[in-house]
Structures are given as structure tokens and as C-alpha cells.
Image (cartoon, rainbow, N blue to C red; front, side, top):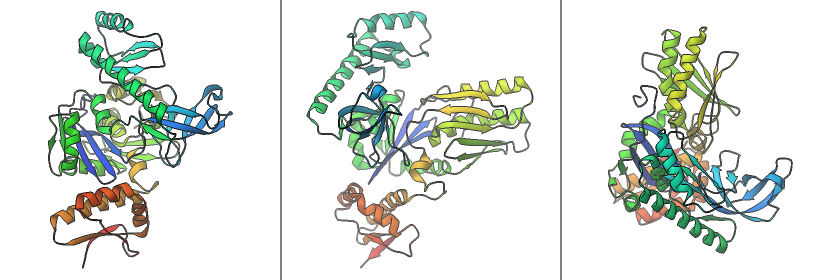
Length: 444
């Protein structure tokens, strides 16, 4: 828990990558401590481009519902109902589907690079506020304005401040090329269709340019990793060994704090609550001690939306101001926009964090319960069965699972096919009513 001392988040310097049937897991590390988990199960994630078809238009919401090839239609804000029913539209995912809500979509695409964000249909030039040198800002503005066509736009990322003209031009050329390829692909595709799918690892490396190490626990994924990051290495079991405990803890409502205090984190349909338990410490000191861990837990758990922190009461306005300043500094480096609004009349700190993907709990757990959901259990079972099969090559390993878990796995053809490829034969999955979750069994 020492990654965020000093009330700031250090940059991600390493990624742990674990691929298994039906799932890719990534742990973003800073100073040897996990600060964020990304779990990909094949749904269209933030930034994905999809050629969709409008299913219906809701004029009251000024929005359209779009078939993007997922169980739930995506939601596209469509001012003036610009897209009629049946229309084919190129959209980009701005927030992944979660629970009973489909993905949020935008019809104004952007292409992400490590230095620049290219907006082919949204003119304008915007520079990161973190580029503090006025002379450098003006130099970047002058250079890039001269390179843009009238219909194009750019967002200049902080990292561009240290890049030379050749690197900036090369990235702009690359982003333009990707957009042309996407447009050509969209012209030939039949909706709904995922377009120019960018692997999650590529997106993470682009978003975190200071990554210096990438360790992969699956030999089958090493070639892909090396293509994107030549220094990637294989290290058996590295994800579970160095990030598995933190992933389990990120699903526990209670988070211990140094000095004996704790946080209690709970999620409701309306908001996230964080309760600070002082552990007997002085109010201001206990609140300040909780600040770095609050910032880390919001990011680690993927929590978003309306957040209320039940602080230990502070009667002194100066003490409240000091706490708010500490929180703002702690979340300033969170790549997901996070805002500390202030102290409510009842004494809680109010925050918001942009929603980009399902939280860990929404993805892995069964509703509000602390138990893993059927999909999570099924994929865990596949991993466990493959490990057992490779450890005991002469045995005929099978997976016995609760009926609900087995039924869900039976529909996940991609995961079962992947498991069969790895094993060299189909992996039997048996529905057993007496099994609560799953068990590894040997068949005659």
C-alpha cells in the first residue's frame, strides 16, 4: 500500500499480463504495487470502433439505441435524432456495457496515440494543461496547426512536450493512416461489426508510455506481447504471485490502513460510499492518512460515478480545506477524470469519477453479493483444470461445476475452443448439482 505516499500517484512502470481461455487480465504496477486492474472478456471496451445499426430512436432522450453485436444495445446521444431507425452508423465506445446497461457510444471518433489524440471530424487544437512551459506550448501550437487539415483536430498529450518534431509528425501520420484504414473497413463491412479492433495490451501501452517492463504468464501470449513491447518476458505464474492477492483484496469491502484504521467501501445503485474508521487516531490525522489509499482504491477497483466519503468529522474549516486539497492532489494523476466537489452540509466529501468500464465488483461478483459470479467461476475453473492437466499429463482431467456455471461455460464456445487447443483435446465440463462452484476431477 505504499505506492501513493506523498498524496500523489506515481506513473505506471510495469504491466503484468495473464491470458487464459475467455479472459485476459492486466495488472498495472507502480513501484511494485498494483494500482489498476483491467480484465477483458471480449466485450467492446472504451475506444473500440463498431459499425452499428440503429434499432430505435428515443426523441425524449435525444438518443438512439444501436445494435453493436452485444446482448444489450449501445446508447448513442444523438442530438436532433440525427440517426434514424435502421441507419448504419460508425460509433466509438466511450463506456463499456455493465450490468443491465449497454455501452455508451459516440459518433465523434478519436484515435489515441502516445503523444497525440487525433479527432478526424472534430476540428480544433487542445494542449494538455500539464504542459507548463509557455514557450513549449506556443511552439507545439504553431507546429501542429500548420499540419492539420481544416476538418481535423488534435489533443496534445503531456508526453508531447518532450518529443521532437519528427516524432510528432510520425505519430500524426500513423493516426491518419489508421483512420483511413478504419474508414475503408467500415465501407465494406455489414453492421453490426467490430472494426480495427485494438488489442487491450496495445491500448494500455499507448496510455502508459512510461512502462519499462512487461511480464507475461502465458507462453501462448508472449509473441503478441513481444510484437508490441520487444522487451516482454515470460514468467510463469507472475500475475497470481504478484497481483493475485491484491485482486482478491480489491473485492473486499474492508481495506486496512496503516496505524490501525480502515476504509469500508460499498456500492449502491446510486453511489459509492467510503467510510473512514479512525482506529482511535486524531480526526484530521486519520482522515489525511486515508487519502492516498482512497485514491488508490478508487482506481484499483474501477469505481466510478457519484462517490461519498464519510470522513471523521472536522469542525475546523481550515482542516476541511486541507483535507480537500490533499484529496485533489492524490487523484490528480488518475488517468480517469476524477473531481473532488467539496464537503456536503452533512459533512461528507463528495466526489465524481468518470465511468469508462465496469468496476471489478460488477464484472467479477454476483450482484451485490461478495461471491464470484458464474462467469468468473467458470473461467477460474478452466484455468485450474488446465493447470491440473499439464501437471498430470497421464490423467484425464475434467471440470465438474455447479449447473449454472456449467451452463454458462457451455455457451462460451471461444473459451472452450481455446482450452481444447491448449490441451490438445476437448476439456469435459460436467454439471454436478452437489458442487457449489467447481471441482477438478479425474475421469476413468
